[in-house]
Image (cartoon, rainbow, N blue to C red; front, top):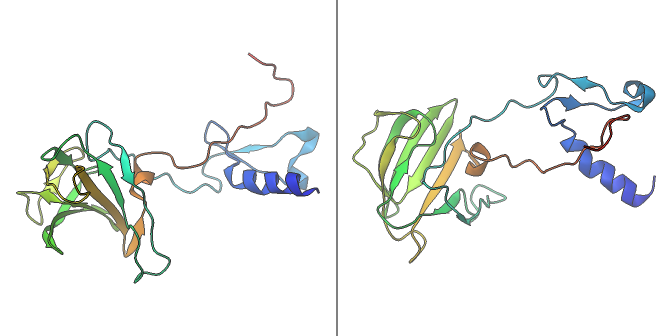
Length: 191
């Protein structure tokens, strides 16, 4: 196999998912007549993440992306910075849960929501009247954005952890999988 064809095969292999969400499989025994069999989505696909909402409205611009460190003690960006229209905008919870922390961490007011299954969201700098133990529903206001995190630009830092592992918060609100164009099945014409 030539290098460009091998590279294309390697790059497309992880993204071999049909538009309907079904998983395509390929192997010598599974390609009779040149067609790929389609398996149910439950056959080898990771479960989908919950469909969370953005913590700011309207949908904010990402000012600084998720950039986790290689080692837990190294520097990095363990969340995303989301641009706000102005300071004092309401910050909402992206998913239902229970407030697990409201307080100051390294001179910034932080609100943390426990969503269950080990998932926690943290927001800073957010002024909140909530207390640990308060229940919040998806979309509830948890506080107002304070100035200072992104210098003169109003922004909220949003972090998500599962246990002690930091996750990219954007994966809970947008599909981060690469787009893949799949060939038409034989016998299908163009529209």
